[in-house]
Image 1: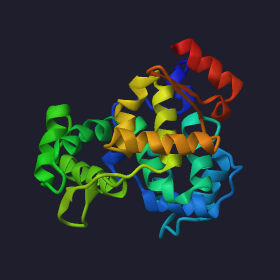
Image 2 (image 1 turned 180 degrees about the vertical axis):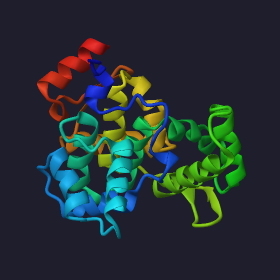
Image 3 (image 1 turned 30 degrees about the horizontal axis):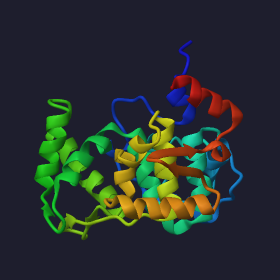
Length: 261
């Protein structure tokens, strides 16, 4: 019997492929779930709501199953795991932060989405992203791995996700935009980076920080508000930055994160 790793226990995926193989980050579905379901919920109850009760309004039973499978690939959909549980809690606390919350969680679990961020970051503000460029970027990152049709589909999916997350603008013609951090999404970005082992200044300079803000001072302002709201504990003195997320972690998770670092 294979023992799950610390990262898997926290809700990360160690699969070599992610949910963007078949869908974008399914923001509309996640928004429906957060709006319609209670804060206290289990993975089995989420499954029942999606498959048995058809809360997402899918046309067939097979499409309900497919939606649940894709959502699990993207988010884990398990409130007993820190990565999804905190997304769920924060999404209920501030639904307007949900696009960035979903982006952060999907990014943490999907290697193809993570790789695609390199191209997104290389664009200048207002620059047009040609889908063929994303297809080639994915090929460069995963040479010979995917068929032409799969790369085209994956490029569409990741571009849609980056649009929901504020990094791209436009429906058909996609241009580079700049995301604006909200206190809740900024806190979650730092939290997820913290789970991966990042600490202090490294968190502020990480890809997780870049997911929600391209501006360091803007990010720190959002984090100061998050700290004032009790979402995290942030201390800055003499050039040293310390984050404390113990209020978002169970004692077992806190011990696991500490031991793995």
